[in-house]
Amino acid sequence: MRISVTGCGYLGAVHASAMAQLGHDVVGIDVDAAKIDRLAAGEPPFFEPGLPDLLTESTASGRLRFTTDAAAAANATVHFVAVGTPQTADGNAADLRYVDAAIDGLLPHIGPGHTVVGKSTVPVGTAARLAERVKATGARLAWNPEFLREGFAVDDTVEPDRLVYGVEAGDDSSVAVLDEVYEHALGLGTPRIVTDFATAELVKVSANAFLATKISFINAMAEIAEATGADVTQLADAIGHDARIGRRFLNAGVGFGGGCLPKDIRAFTARADELGRGDAVAFLKEVDAINLRRRKRVVDLATAELGGSVVGRKVAVLGVTFKPNSDDVRDSPALDVAVSLKGLGANVVATDPKGIENARSRHPQLDYVDDVNEALRGADLVILVTEWAEYRQLDPAAARTLVAMPTIIDGRNTLDRDAWVGAGWRYRGMGRD
Ligand code: UDX
Image 1 (cartoon, rainbow, N blue to C red):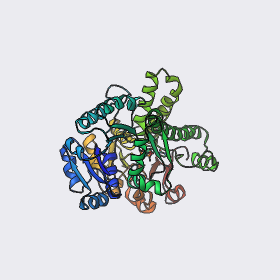
Image 2 (tube, helix red, strand yellow):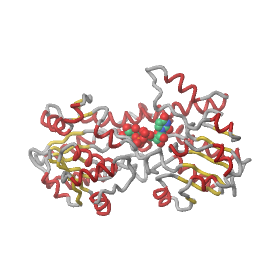
Image 3 (tube, rainbow, N blue to C red):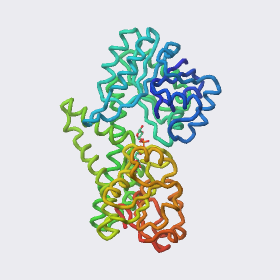
Image 4 (cartoon, rainbow, N blue to C red):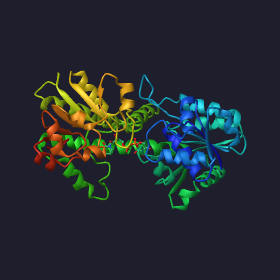
């Protein structure tokens, strides 16, 4: 199929590359010329395992190219819209200006026989509004939310765990087009749900709301565990054995961040308020509040461990990204903790395998070092906030020789506590001691 993908950020770049690898003829379109140049050269402007190879192979095959010219869409018949929907600067709602601009860019180049496919995460009701504009050209609109996880984006795109098509009643043509696009995944037996626009839009935000709720649930239990001496990790293991609950996404710690979960639950709350159904998802405000309290908990723990004041003390912060295998620092709990401690007067030295460049551009006031050993050297306190493999595999005995004071806060409950205590460390977990 001939496909255009408007928006070559995280979602669009991965989607375009994966579709080309699956045999489609793809053009990626973005207004950012620097981004387009980098993608065309096979260098993704962000870190994602597997993407550089996929990009290089797909561009070399001649099936993938990138341009800033929206008119390039005219050669395609399927047009994915994969632009961002960030949180508005003055509130919780999603900012739809990029979605509208993408549709504006496509409209002159589409017509009968074309299908526009929305992938961006949008407030429920957006697709119905956009459909009117798209249909005025004779083209059709479908909504096809994306569930990829950073760090696993390539695999999640090539082999998704489900496909959701939101279409207008009776629009069999759009279903047939999407079936052809996703022939590979459907051949693997991937479940496919065909539904209306509103349900498709809601599937995406409710999935993220559920995941955020699951994390905040276990973090709420961590708060109780902290007050009672219970161990939230064992609690999660025990309740996770109940197949109805499941152990995944029950890792207590410093909480969730990133470009999706935090802003999506806020946008969902804002949209529900507009619909007069704010009460239905009022609990998401609590989910957000619990999540943000975990960051404060780490800062409070650090302050307590340093005797009531962090002023002038060297704190090694291991990790700045919102999760491992990503260079994304958007709404990162790790970076938030580092910035708060710096604001309180600590001498913060942060390190990260991939995220330093992005962190530095947002928070130049922090000191960054590439080498974890350098971060540890002379530290009065060590805080692990992003569970990169290289931090999980640190040798506690060797690390002990580098620091000034052997105290570690394990903000992700990811270390072998006994090994660290055995090597002479004071260990503080999240919801467990
Ligand atoms: C999420 C959804 O998982 C994905 O389906 C959607 O398409 C986009 O949003 P992503 O933002 O890449 O993906 O990250 P995810 O793996 O979901 O983790 C989100 C955050 O939750 C991270 O900060 C992570 O550290 C945290 N988390 C996750 C926990 O604190 N505890 C857990 O048990 C799991």
